Length: 332
Image (cartoon, rainbow, N blue to C red; front, side, top):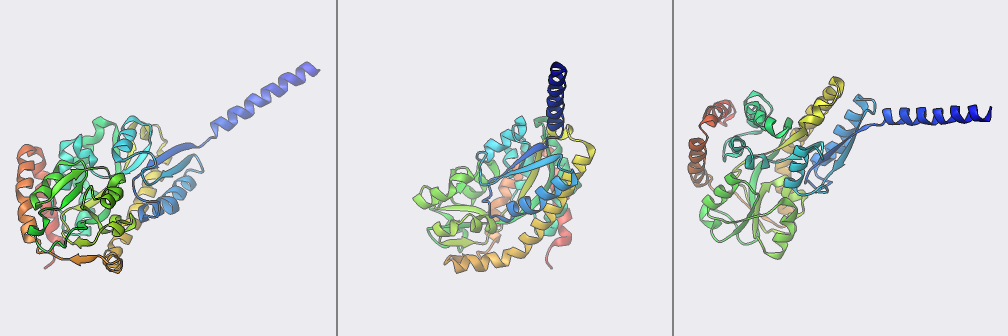
């Protein structure tokens, strides 16, 4: 009798263990380099995470890793490719592996938030996104970070001539390096995670990013001037490891796609509304904001665009499609 009870008890333990394992949530780590208080992370915590977990009845658990907790961008980009990180919000480091991605970083390509949304979340950009297939990465959607502007702690930028003699931090991207050098800056390549300390210590004197990124990263403490150059429209991608994605059920994929779509809408609306407010907040921190004539900056960008299209003729039809799409958004 005792022996039979022992066998039954052991079987019950195994059964309970099996049920517990079977019902354990599948974890999705999502990495990014934004500070935890950045609006993109606020949306991840308050919208994306609860939506996915609720829609999947707890089958999926979202773990958010802000502020480069899982490494600098290059590291978590590689993590998504390898599958050690399931999802991430990335910038355009993909251009270092897939040439045609440089197209989406060409200067003065996009003229408004509406134009950008049509391009990055429509069929035009899909022609570019599919080039990530061989890397085992899928783009689920993209959200705006706004137009990139230039800040520095050396002198106000009132014209392109003022760019000379300023050491500018750039990320490891061919387009941005050539563009900043074309404007007259000397360039220093470094990851986002090192920018604040480098500005503080004088390793670099300036950087370019959307105002939102600069402000919420606290760089106003180590910068004195901001120039509204709007040279590139910054976008961030929701990316997922393809093998992991393929292993999800249709209902789980639907839940994630829905949460991505809602998150993009919230971030887009907040970013658009926040632009004017961020200029005011930046000035309140004591920074001088200047509005240089953009014509010389646009002209300096032309050779970079022409060189890219010459090297990548397959990108030219897409480039023309983007330009054509933007005509209806041009300010009269």
